[in-house]
Length: 555
Image (cartoon, rainbow, N blue to C red; front, side, top):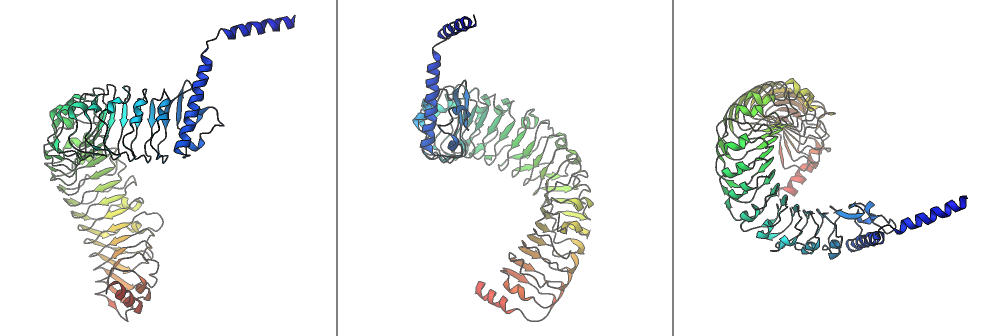
């Protein structure tokens, strides 16, 4: 009975199998074909980091690195940074379902690979950061009509951008920056790309031309990068129609208008870069672009004052207004911004004091306000969050003692306080051997006092503290020291004998102090460009080795 049941089941199962669709052998053949195509690509391009792991032993190529499959068929190839050099072969487009191709950051150097016209399902193509040259073919629209993303950034493509670039009905991102395109840009054709969300034409040597009014038609744009492309004139009002913009970058051009009011009222704008133009006029007093994260309008000809409304930009991390003609005081509310990390206001005509709470409420990393007319003391909590890397406040009228918060400012890298009126004892923790990262300390032309530790921390490369009131002996200099200038202080004692550990030092100026004793023999082995020991009480002879070096390097 049991045997009859098994036989009946086998007959039923065999009959059922016979009713299944006949597509299985065809699918197997296609799978096998793709497998062989991919192995052929490996043989052709060589065994790079990823391709080296493609092998015939593993029958399932969908598990190979750099590949994505959908229903067992290759739909995506991602091979960036694989040092690929040979031209893209025709066999690549035999992968009929290929929709995504990323070959960025390789070493391709042919003209644009028109062989890709045969990849009829391609939606995403990234050939950026290679060395593709020549001109784009006039029939570039022969690429897949399904194309949504085209990235040719950072190559060597030259000539004019062909009008057919505007014939991709589904294109969402067109990235052509950092090439050698010249001539005029195809404004009308690009403005026909109704679905475009990202457009970058930056850093190409186009002929000088006005900001394209037609780009105002691209109302889906979120990212518009038009820097370094010789744009002239004003920013047209039509661009205000781009209400979805999160990034607007028009730096390094020749724009000469005022900044339109709508820019400061854009609700979705997060990144605004307009530096290095000829922009004029005042910044609008009404700033409601509250989503701004980074704002850089530096190196222009802007006048007027910094708006109080900047204190409402609670998402702001970067504020660059340097090298303009701004005057007035810095709004106190800027010191309350919770995310501010980098503020650069140097080379203006600003007056008054720094915001009292600057540094307390945000992870401030960089403060650069040099070359203004600022006064008062540095804020007490400037390094409250212990994130500061750079304090650059030279050429102002600051006074008073340094804030105690600098005692714990262990990430400080550059301290430039020179040409002010600071007084009091210089913060001792600055010289800490163990914790500090400070490399540059320029505090000359103030009225600081204090003493050095026995030994300076190892990574100091530049110390300039002339025209202060430092006293005590000269410390053992750091091994990376290149410049040590302590002119006109009250330093005393002898020059340290062990100078052989500072072989990188180029300038040593100890003049105008109270140093005594003789010149160490080791000073003769230093490769100095400048040495000044005058105005001290040094006696004895100059080491012979020093004269040998002088004759060899200063004939």
